[in-house]
Figure 1 (cartoon, rainbow, N blue to C red):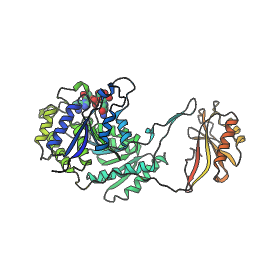
Figure 2: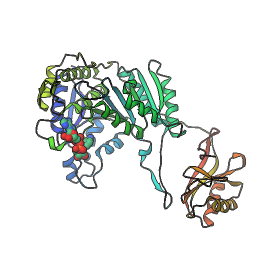
Figure 3: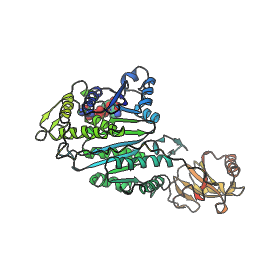
Figure 4: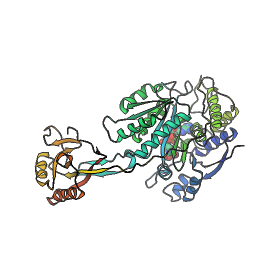
Length: 481
Ligand code: NAD
């Protein structure tokens, strides 16, 4: 008997308890070696006054087991309730969201009968850092943050996932033709890490055409790794076109733990009637088995599930006259999967997972020791009359101490000097001050420049230091500069 792996289980709300019981029944009969600790999450906990939806004592279990199998929960109506998924993501450092999007043609309707794509989405960085500012009466901004360790972790995770799961190719989607520094870093790290995985194909697509291709010809993709925003959108597109939103499970993986769930919600109207399909949560639990090193059990239960689907034993949501053979409830579906243990599907592609020892979840590395040179400052100012020429004249006169006004931009477009009369200007201008020839300047010089602008009564919303790293420019040029 293999050593039992401790996991934390939450039965959730609505259909949660039924689909969790069904899932755990299949895992147990399939030979999963699990030591289950149960915690309470969701509606009851929220309504008892805990705005996070989870008791502080439950964290103790999660921190110990580091593996969380979570049924869907009902978020109570009204404000003040924090998303449990966001709380778990932050507390457990869940940087990778993994969502297999598979067609089960002809049992589930889809235009893409052979689709079998896994979306690996970065989960912590990008525009989701939640750093937003209003920088003038008319302009707001959101900071898009990428880090080297953050990109390394997700890209390496995608390649390791591909290798462990017998996949052939990893594709990267970015928009690095436009965002050369942020998306550019993601793409660069993808190329660096891809070189270490000679056994796997790799490719990069610009996200717009890549997304179009994914929606049109998903068969061309295998594992696709993406920054947070593109991954958020495209994982839903991929699940939808596979036809299997109600059947999809997902994994959230981090350095301090991992969480596995169905992608659907708690379907309160179906609760307590033995109707719900447990497949989404079950397929989430298959990802968990692979994660905890029980790949043989994962393949066994997954193949039994595929064979059950193939034999036409379906819950109400999948049931189709002419294709389905037997309409069953939640419990009976689980019993049917158990009865098919040891069998493999004949029409659908059988599941296979590598039993090689699992590598630890990747961690990123922080680099140190670059030579950093300060070469100027961007000062963001309010200029309600929105006229670049009057502002340019005023600021040029205020430049001093070795700095001069090099250019001004409005919403990223250069508008001074020699701006185009047609360019629409808002009331927020970015004003770039640098020394002649891009020579290094001191912090005091940049601060004195901010002081002179402020002293002239011009309101400053924010500043950005312009720096070079090992002689390489650490800031972008304005469009048209
Ligand atoms: P939902 O996914 O619960 O339901 C959407 C539709 O799909 C409904 O018609 C439902 O009956 C059906 N459905 C969903 N799962 C099914 C299953 N396993 N078997 C058969 N039919 C199924 O989405 P919703 O109605 O928008 O949300 C209901 C509640 O779930 C809300 O409180 C929401 O906040 C919560 N929710 C939780 C999670 C989570 O815990 N991860 C995710 C999404 C929504």
